[in-house]
Length: 301
Image (cartoon, rainbow, N blue to C red; front, side):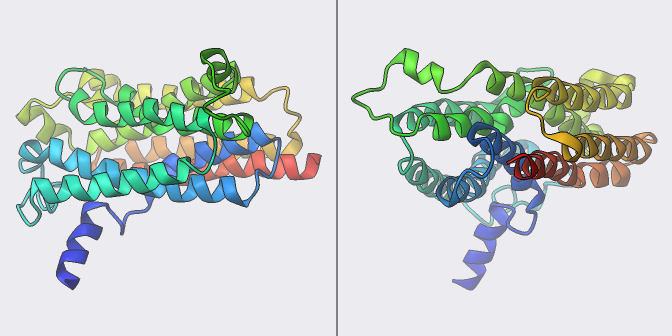
């Protein structure tokens, strides 16, 4: 039983929390923005636990979809499904249970959030197969990893909405244009860090015919990554310009920009170690942006 549990924990990347933190920080940033500050313990718990559960479920789906490719990639060859330690059925059952638990959390919010959660699930299911057909599948991942932003607005601004009062107009109104703008710019952050991730496996991916942004961008990969970081930070600064978050937000943007420059130092020679380290450090950049928003609201209030 203990060995089986260890395999399940390995399947969901329990020892590598950087993955779910990359999803969490933009979601929490949006939660604070939607609530105009502290969102309450219930909403916070829903997003923290829901993010961990959905990222874990996504790992299960991804490993099943990529099992034939992963065995040819040095970094992924020993994943439980790939090496046959867990069956496809087991992995899918684990993923389904985790997704249902996350859905149970959403059910404690409101009808609008529940409705939007189906769109989020659809994008999550599509991403693992985008790598076969899309030259930059990281863009699809960007939508999936950013969907916590409109979900946050739906949870906060759809409060009190029931299935009896839910309309298409109401469903759209709880997610304002600012949320979609933040999602669009956050997508560039995902492009930045997942391109760094793809640069680690570029040789293996070329050999097996996998499509990634690192391959598509070619010799412009480092330049593009830095452009993605700049677009993300400038975009969020533009959208939040009227929030009056003061010096904490300005300081956070400067600190995040400095981190992006450090990433350039790490990836400029395109070494596996440097690119992987840059990817793993990205959750600190997201945490910095969130801290600027949260502290800005607390001082403004």
